[in-house]
Length: 165
Image (cartoon, rainbow, N blue to C red):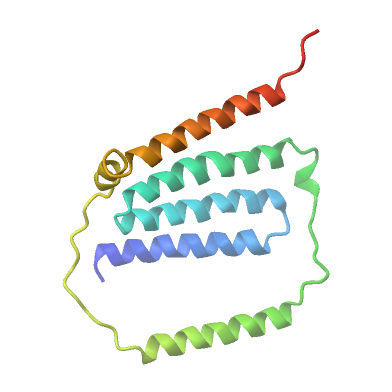
């Protein structure tokens, strides 16, 4: 096993393990912090796929924006640490049967597939190509969207402003 495969397995284990904690934790605070592990694992997988632009978007929007917003909401809620969430409608036996059936199906597909091996791909950064397209072929739609976003921000300020008497 080479180092890339080993790193892939470690990142996948982090992602899936954190997702299990998010799904099955009875403490909302633990679930919110485990979501950081899921987002970081997805970020790592994007890096391994040489999808640098999507990885940075994952880092900035999901980890830097959405996760921080969720953590602030959870941390600023009074006594959220003591809240224990119980879902009485949850049927663990039915869920285990479904997971086992899906796992058997995926395992069968994995073992019965003839995998094609190819030469290793040469990973190149995608940011330059995206930038060239945005500032070349798609410049007009890009500028129209930027103007639309500025107008939306101005509209939000006008609507949110209190009337001065």
